[in-house]
Image (cartoon, rainbow, N blue to C red):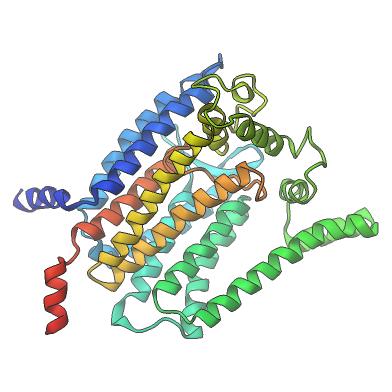
Length: 401
């Protein structure tokens, strides 16, 4: 009982600005999920009530993660990684198929998405593996170790298929390696190789059409690259925005119209015509395209306010990393902050047409149980590092010893 009370007292040392930003984002999410489902007459009209339940569950996980001493993560990092790996294998074997992808496991009537837990698992494992000893992780063996640890999870998620979530692992791994002291030259080389690979994939989709390659040869090329039809369609409509505007390019076009039509002040809460009239598909408005709903109803000022909240959240993550008392805490904070930034950047960019549609949700705002809980756990770990920070006086004193 004494140790539990001591843990609760530690919560007073939390990063309160980051907590306030997260709370406002959660409120925003519930409000606009309700707006995205306002005119529906089916069961999805009450999605915001389900989201409230997920917020309550996420709050419990957040407090538990904040009270948990992050330094004990080394003891269970491999177990959490193995559990996530097993869940991803189970998804491919007995998972539930929705919208053409097999990404969910049904447990007691509740769908969970193990790929969301996999992001947190790889951050915890990489931080645990690279934190002892305080040596720089710039050598090629360390980089290969990181790749080998992340690769099994990425391959299993790609098989679902879920290309967007798979690609999120790349900046997370690079961020942890950078915080661990990896050579900038080697990281730059990896980034350039990744960009070259992405350009090669785009070329493999666009060029065959330009040179009149036979359909059978084209399909053979796609099988070699493991590109499904929906992935090819999304990349193609990104490169050629006017292609298939009523099919594969519909979501992208309607999202851009919604964002642009919001103007400076927006059309008003629950007054967005793209959303309310169903031009922005109701299957994605509360999830991947929630930013378009917010932009249409609150305009540029509301969208900018939302991005300010995310900036405060990310700045809080950086502050937690700088205040960390050890290497493990710093790597954890960097990994979580890079993960959050990647989700925000990619989601907003795809909503306004600057990136292909990837299906990455907006943290704390998009509808989704597993993603919300995993995000709240990640934020709880940031707070766990921050509340156990060394005071400025303590750090100065240790530096003199």
